[in-house]
Length: 156
Image (cartoon, rainbow, N blue to C red; front, side, top):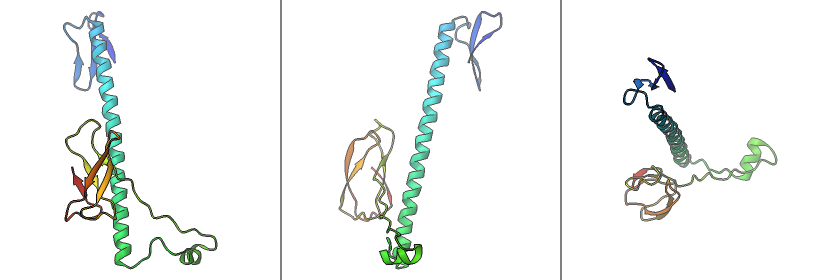
């Protein structure tokens, strides 16, 4: 907020760290420009934080899906179950669920081409070429390295 202070002619931007008053504080346009810029940065950082939280949540869901697949395989549980099993458990007309396949997405900042994180899908094998959608929407080709495991997060 732009506040009028002292003699009534000076202006300042009120922040958590105190008041910002460029020059002697009498340049209202400069103070309003600073106030607008700070507000824009606050909104941008908030939006970026929300996107990062959503990306982290998506990664956790993908990890849980990979763990579920591994557990089902270890315990010899068929997934998706047969139509017969579905009807026995849930009644006539129950439909077999489709196996969930998460999109392969690269996590990073749009325009930042230095480092991306890519989580391998559950069926990834060494040497396989994957197409990954980058944060800016560009499609990137990635070869699964030897020793990489399904669900593993790679830095590329």
